[in-house]
Image (tube, rainbow over all chains, first blue to last red):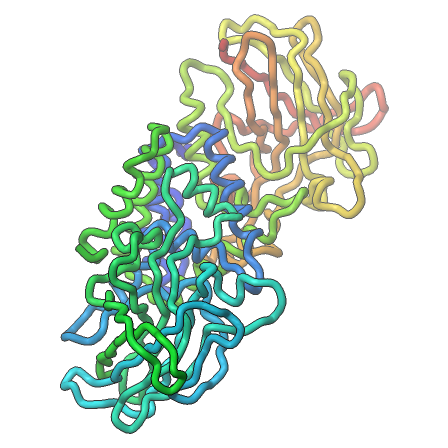
Length: 277
Length: 277
């Protein structure tokens, strides 16, 4: 029997009959069923199909060591956050997770109190909090990796040269507390000079993410936690282009004074509750 | 309300609310609905998701001026043939269509009778037939573009250098007939040195296509026709890795004699019925 509209999906699923890896077979079956369903619903013309082919091609070709355009695509289509929700179903009151994003990179180790803004200048900010378990007991020696963009909305990896700035790894102290100095984060657009930027433009969507600092926290006996702290009042909290805002992760930025450096600063408090393994 | 498993798809569809292009909106709605459905059904781990990201990245990066790995992916997943079926619903008894494939390229014009195998050597073959309309009346002056692989299973564009061989454009004569000399086509594997080859390997599928010659026929007042002629008896007719075989396109290869060149040859007859615009 010829391959036709009504037996097409079955024919492709049949071609998977010899796959021994059950998981792979499950994934391929679901993927093909839905991919064919899209084609049947939408009935793309040859031109539209070629546009899709070229979009995917350009997206792959935009990727390099410092840029991952397919992760960006996954982010703006809500796939990354959906995956995050599925893989991190909250069991109690541990801190909620959010996307890793495309800007994670190795970072230098710093001591508590240090300023992680090495060359970037901005509004001074002290970020502090406590790492604890779900019983509110402190977790000491947790590895706390943080990274953020500067007031220009750029991460270090988006700039020329091999500058490393506004990223660091520190450890929680005996009482579970941590503290680092930095500059106030600012809302920023995701990179729009590639196919994903063109797509957002065609979809009449803005490319902005509300101000945030990324956290990746690891401690023995606890599940790794990837999250952000967001700043209350940011104009893009309600329309984050990667859908990553959770209300429980929004914190107030308070005006304060940095006694050690005798200067005005903002204070941002972010306690983190880890879930046992 | 936070983005979560139950409202994720709705949240992304809501982000399309400002799209003015109704067709684009329809496509994106269908795509996102099914893409999210796959994620919900399969519940990929972060590792599996990253494997998918890297597969798509490598597929894009394998593409260049002479290689289109995403078309190949569309082909082996049955998407190209499904699209072909949707865009070429047969209305009467015109010749059936099949995939364009990734090897179409500009070709030299030849006269009827000419040998299109310029440097490739193989079993001599005369391909001939008549171009006609659905009332069986001849169509003269139709443009007939043909391309095929040689006995080594390779198209010219897969070889080093800028050699052009086994591809040509000729015109049907006053009586609608056409004839060209070539070599017998052979079954061959699609290119397997890229991500799509790895995928087929993981899916425990062979990469072969049964022997065929591509045809693209155009005539004033008729719909462009993209099709193949397949050779009866080929061992891969039942399992073409791109699902492109249609029974109506299979022809017998008869042993014969080429009087003009005083040598044995195969004869392949392929009449083509064009559909009015």
